[in-house]
Image 1 (cartoon, rainbow, N blue to C red):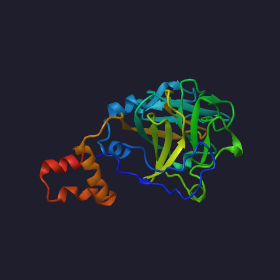
Image 2 (cartoon, one colour):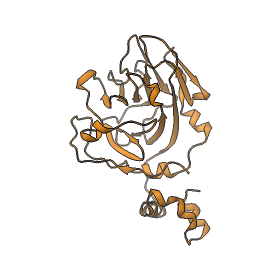
Image 3 (tube, rainbow, N blue to C red):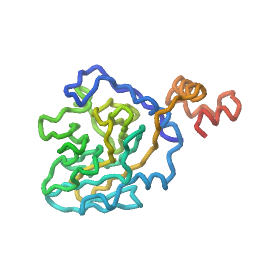
Image 4 (cartoon, rainbow, N blue to C red):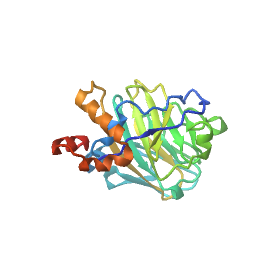
Length: 264
């Protein structure tokens, strides 16, 4: 099976920037996307890091599933994914060890025009109009912004206390034009809006020498009317809750129905 369903983040704090939104509900269709089987390695590599679209200080490995930054001083280095997205709902997992982040570790998206190298240490992703990023160390959002004026994400006490683990989820909804993140099974809310009409690529920028950052594409959902059967499955899975999804096989139901509930 794929990822399990996401919970909503707390909405008790008022966002401090137009980039943030008080609606912490996961995008429509995200639960279905994450519950579906994870795409095979061929698909993941097809959506992985692009060895032809990265800083010269980055080496892409495993067919695009991972990259390593060479230990070059006073340089910030970025990479784009192989595929750009202009419609649909997309999700991918970034795996970035906490001890390999350094002073500027930024995760987000970029257009094909965003720069991928700077001759100093900086939050390169999000430093211009062509990219949007979340610094997962400082917990700051960047888009045409630098330094202390960058808004905190998530806003308020939740953001101050947050420690971003090794794995985080990036959620790009091109139907609504939003970019958000999730950690530990909790959706943190939309970080950026106004992205409709663009073609955006998964991207990160890094400064830590020999850091290795992995990407795992989880799938796409193109907006379409849901059948009553699909809606019923989502309702049943929601009623069971994340902790009891593993018990579906023990329910007194026909085998075909169990398989359907398990996306098999």
